[in-house]
Length: 344
Image (cartoon, rainbow, N blue to C red):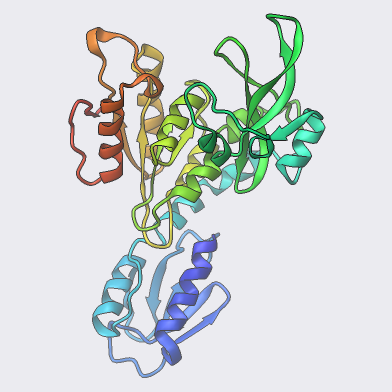
């Protein structure tokens, strides 16, 4: 709820003597009537069902934050983002899910890797950092890839493999290691063996990378199935997160994605860019319905699939990839091009 604190600061800066903030409440000079002293109450309590609402004890005016922000701009000349508190109400509705989240086992990824992979090194610490499967060394460094010592079944020798840590808001929850057969292994154990595991609750690879890439004025993120799909979009400059398969969707992930695309200035959108096979289509429908039920703007992007063949983001030809980048980056334009926006 860090945005609420920034909003209170913004309110005090613009309102001056007409604003008095006390904890999660603020009293302001009401913009709905001639108010010489603050008599309008604003609710900034993140645990309240009515977070983002206002009520005037002088004239009885009440309603949503967006309505207050528009009236305050008209009467007082304040410049307040109308959508700033919309995501706060969404988070309140999902708050009962928070106890289900698995607690982290280590404070930093360095500590976590020391516990799980004693022989490991960050990609940027290599003498000559290599690329990996078509991705540049700079991209591998950008997403905080590590090299870890593992086992090569081909020659039955130890070898170094890429490891992608899953960090959410700076905390490590697990990771993905690439093996020698184009398959991904999840190589962590949860603190509580009776739980569903971090993959269900926090399995959103590149989450922190996407947060750093967000445009705060027009926040959005692409949700993909696999590591290479998300990496290709990130390399093209698009914030992307990998869901790690089609079966791992949960309300906890919904909570995290809502928070990711919610800023002080706007509540953004989530683009679903899944594979075109049956599993991908089913996941698109399931995840889209789940996110929409939580009040998030969701757009399902249909990849071009010549002759009905399976297509994913990683395998897109360069010109199709550029069209996809243009489509999601523009967001509002939503040009169909060779793709398409799916209703189902």
